[in-house]
Amino acid sequence: MELIKVHGSGNDFFILDQEKLGRKISETELKRLAIKVCDRKHGFHGGADGILCVLPETRDDVLGRMRVINADGSEASMCGNGLRTVARYLSEKNGKKSFKVATMYADLEVEQANELAPGVKTFSVEISPVSFSADDLKMHVGKEELHEDKLEMLSGELKFSAVAVPNPHLISFVDHETLVSEDLGRIASYLNDGKNALFPDGVNVSFVEILSENEIFVRTYERGVGYTNACGTAMSASSLIYVLEKTDGKGFEKTLSVKNPGGMVKTIVHRKEDGNYFMSLIGNGTFVAKCTVSLDEALLGDFSAATWEETGEQASYEKFVKKICE
Ligand SMILES: N[C@@H](CCC[C@H](N)C(=O)O)C(=O)O
Image (cartoon, rainbow, N blue to C red; front, side, top):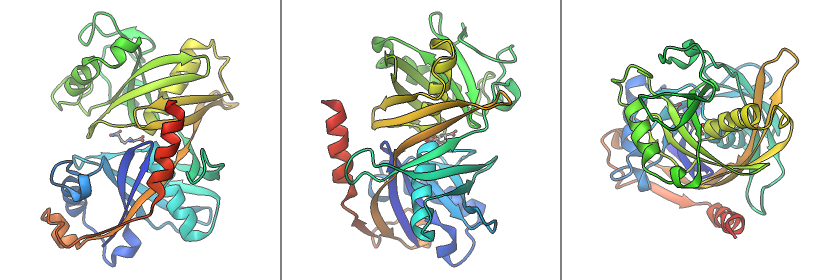
């Protein structure tokens, strides 16, 4: 089986192209594969945040389908950082620069963009559909929507907004001290324990610090994963809430820099004529290594005979991160 180790802002994945596998991988195998391969201690080459399974599509403008399997084997409806890497994969496979990728709930527009820095392949992807409704969020907080509201059961101080893009996100604007505190882990691990009444299906939780008018920092604890270097849908959701709550709506169609522990992306928040929102998420789609591993051995967690061939792209990405941190 061929795998490609990829990342978007340090949010890392293995791409598995179902078409190249030769046989259909079963649901049980896919879940088990994600758990085994992604394990940070015993997985393949340091593990990953998830597996991105690429499946064929027959429609002309849709070049493929992306399925997102989190490190714990659960399936997510979307993955923004992952979609950039899948967009790049399908772009190179089909020799096209602009097309659509099917995801669980929508066919999303993707296109190659100007490189963020020399040697850093960059893609822009659509993040949508957007919903604030408790039903779509599978949220039970006694309110239909959450917009900068307190949730006393989580914190006496913090205010939260909730939005599905379409995976669920809970967002709080905080000061720097709170951003780096243990509060994020405490709140997010409780909300993702599978037992709590507020988000029984879990939720991605982000703390956001406003750095300047056009710059925010987003730190995320992901459902099904834990702390990540970055979460693309969280950065898009945070950008939307930022524009709605902190710019009096003046931030639409403006490019925002979104810093994260793994690097930086750009976002643009759009409002359509029908009043609906969508975001453009622009950032790296880095291929770290091309790998081969036997599926049967991977399912047993045995990677002793696997191969790992670095592409050399990571060096350019690290140079880019060094520059933005100066
Ligand atoms: N890292 C992703 C989101 C992956 C899915 C998430 N953990 C969930 O369960 O919703 C991103 O870049 O958006």
